[in-house]
Length: 200
Image (cartoon, rainbow, N blue to C red; front, side):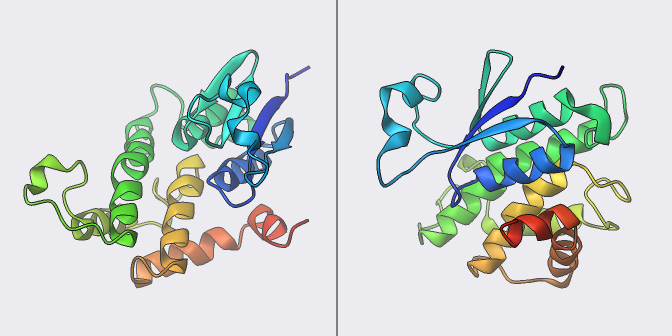
């Protein structure tokens, strides 16, 4: 019997991405909702799992994994039945990992800086993402020819980067370019995404 994933999250967090992936994978999981209002993410018990006191986090077979991108990569490899991750040796594996790391290391901080109205760095080369414009343009190029990051193949990285993209458009942090809107429409049309959006 496959050991279930213990999944710590909050509804208004990046944990939503992990929730979508768990459902897409058909992986067994036990979801533990933490109340920010009650400070449950800062209790000694939870800080022993994630010293940052942030969600999401998972525990699987005694292993703790934090950071949304890392969790997604881990889960897609651990539960391969739906083939949402190219296997090691697959030529698409590099592209798949590239955009996971880009989303975490470039897109997320770029959008955060823009939303917080932080002034651009004087030395653009000292910032991991360079400029917000370059970062957004890179994502647009990654979706060409599409329809997914890996061309015709839907994978876990689409849930990760696509969720970031849709959240950024919803907050009006980036403009809804045609390529982004087509991508968002394709992802939100997935049955599991629709079901979770409806709270089922």
